Amino acid sequence: MQLGVDTGGTFTDLVAADGRVAKVLSTPDDPSRAVAEAVASVGGRAELLAHGTTVATNALLERRGARVALVTTEGLGDLIEIGRQDRPSLYDHLASRPEPLVERGLRYEVPGRLAADGTELAPVAPEAVPAIDPAAEAVAVCLLHADVEPAHERVVARVLRDRGLDVTCSHEVSPEMREYERTVTTVVNAALRPRCRRYLRRIAELADEVLVMTSSGGLLPAAEAAELPAALLLSGPAGGVRAGAAAAVANGFRGAVTFDMGGTSTDVCLVLDGTPAPAAQREVGGYTVRFPALDVHTIGAGGGSIARIDPGGALVVGPESAGADPGPACYGRGGERPTVTDANLVAGRIPADAPFSGLALDRRAAAAALDRAGVTAEGVLAVVNANMVRALRAVSVERGVDPRGLALVAFGGAGPLHACALADALGMPAVVVPARAGVLSAVGLLTAPRRRDLVRSWPAPDDHAGLAEALAALAEQARSLVRAPAGEVTVTTALDCRYRGQSHELTVPDVAAFHDEHRRRNGYARPGDPVEVVALRAAATGPPAAAIDDLPVAPRLDRPVDGPTVIAEPDCTIWVAEGWTAHPGAAGAIVLRRTGEVGA
Image (cartoon, rainbow, N blue to C red; front, side):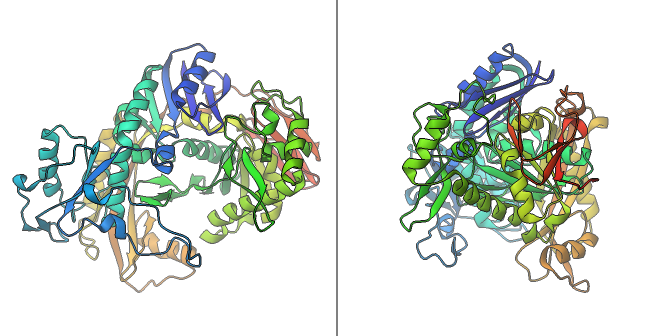
């Protein structure tokens, strides 16, 4: 039995390779309990379990990671606090950066220094490695220019590990330029590792083999994922993006935006030429983490998002969520504050008798919650839709892409309820609701490939000689890390490039592609100017755990249906708005188009 299991803020979703689906309430105090319950509901222990987890993300957002000590180069102990000296919000004088992840008393400095090209200027003596406060549960080691030459970090790490300490080195997790980002990433990994190790050990008991989704959309063996928890910060959303992109392509749309609205958040991602947009780094809870990822934009808008009137008299929806416990008022589990799900129920977009994970929905309780808060269902839906339109614009218009040429792929338990309104607001021609839309992230997990991503700093930005050889070596290293026959592994390479004098980079397949990508993203290019290469990337992918085309799909729609109407499914509800028509699509999808419009 092969399973994909995605842990969300409200529900934990399971999809089996034989087509069975389970959806159980999440258990935030111990997410592994809900995973075990979902697995038990389809027959117990699995041969393979592909898992998307929120444990790393929640631990970072809630500052529940291990207490970390930092060992860095002499003079750089305050780098993690100084940061980039930029303002989180330019015009908000009350905005502040989050507290540094390492308190001042646990920052240690060692003598020794490398030049920018890795040449040793002063050695690191093992006896100079300081004693670490026993209060520290983990140690992060990040020395100057270790991305180019890790020798000094290895000396320090050897001493600390000999003392029995749990050590994360920057050259092991983020061998890229920029000291601040590399330091934060290393500290985040160190802070999350003890908690994620314990969690993944519990999950490992549920299957013969456990694979965990990384932020870049590929699966890692659980033992390796436990050592690289900073790579798991988009673990769940990445699965949905992959499956959503595949559904768009199957229905004739190589350009799309995936729109995943669950119980606590909404995740959107641009898809161009059938491929989700990548990102070299992510900001989570105000902390910059440099790990290859899908370029997912997340906001606090979900079915459980709570509506309220703020002190200025404005209607606000989210980011606070009712979560799984007590959940929306209509769940009848003690929730009294109105949520987006309550508004959809009162507005008639969710039938009271709709299949909803075994819950009987209480429309009276939902209406009473809205009345107590002094808000209307229509107002709540208008505000949350406006929030999500801004998110969709952030990954399309703000990236130089016209959304009028893209399809909207709607999934998650709440996504198909709002898709028509969002597509109308942005002039998008169609909405694709994939098969198993309510559990699509679990589908994406089950059908994702094994994958390893590697990145290396390039020490001589102006010197392109030897690039091909270095990329080939990096590609071969990535290939060797994927546990699959060599003939079943595909490797792609890329470069981080910029114009001389710039402080930001774009990731492109090769130097020649840089000018066109720069024009698309920034509106101009300078073809005559020299291009610097600052990093090399390689991604190796193996075969998926299960082929998406092999998953059984039950018929959903046998003829076009005009809106306004509701299509209730076991895992989600689709609202076909007035002026829209639902059509049968490929791969079990339902494609919504404006009434009278046909064709891809």
